View 1: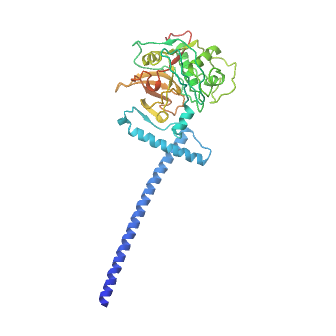
View 2: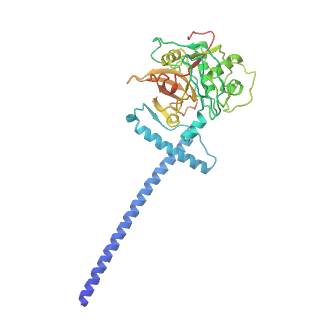
View 3: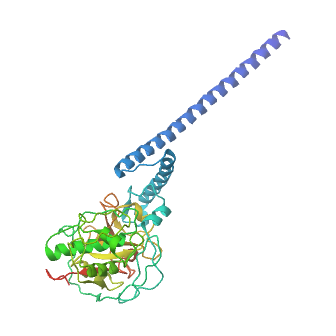
Length: 382
């Protein structure tokens, strides 16, 4: 019995040792796996934080406190995940563009829309382009009805296959409106700068700030309309240079007695909902347009031809069409659009938008409200 008891204890002891060994091995294995996962998550976090710091350097961004920086980082990380997901599915989704980092990657869609787009009052845009002009506004409500002016309608097929006014020296470098609802002023000025080059042979940067401060027909940083801005410039006897009246991204007291550098005699609306008429107009000069901006894709746009989501149908941003073209490899047609969100947005501040959509209003409503200035003398463009 004694021998049996000793043998039994030995077997029990051996079993206990085996169980303990297994537990220790399992514990070590679990600990190793946990450490590996933690390291992976930590490395991913560190890589994203490194990208965020690099983005801050490129965009010259700084934050007032560590808490603000932490919140902006979370928005940045969320946006980067969205950007990567959209790009990964671009081919299967039929998208012909890519998203990427830009000046608004630390803003949520809601923040972006509130800061960089505006509201358009209810109402139909007249089919002849003369009545019920919709009004670009930002931060504030409608600015009132616009006046009437003659309509440009040209349905001919005589326009060149492509044109890029940048290559002809009629487009100044991309500017930045900042957090001021003055897109209407930038669009207005860009068309006059281009027409001045075409008519007079010289390119000069003109002052958006003069419009923001002095144009009593519009609302400064609270929005405006290109047709009314043209009217104010005509009545004022012209518009001065950027050097004479520098941009501040806020409305201030009007500085009068600034010498005009460019004058116009009026403006013309392009027939609404006619991409053919818009094409013929752009063949002769840059044209101001209004578009309906989407808060998710549009503010992350990087390159390609934008054929993605637009806003809810209401025009909320003013830009300038400075050309059009067609890709050789697949025949895809596009508009060349100059924006006013700085050179780090989109393709160095520009974007291509799909041309020739099934919707007569064009991609994001680009053909709904085009208008361009008129200038006396020089080469005839009409």
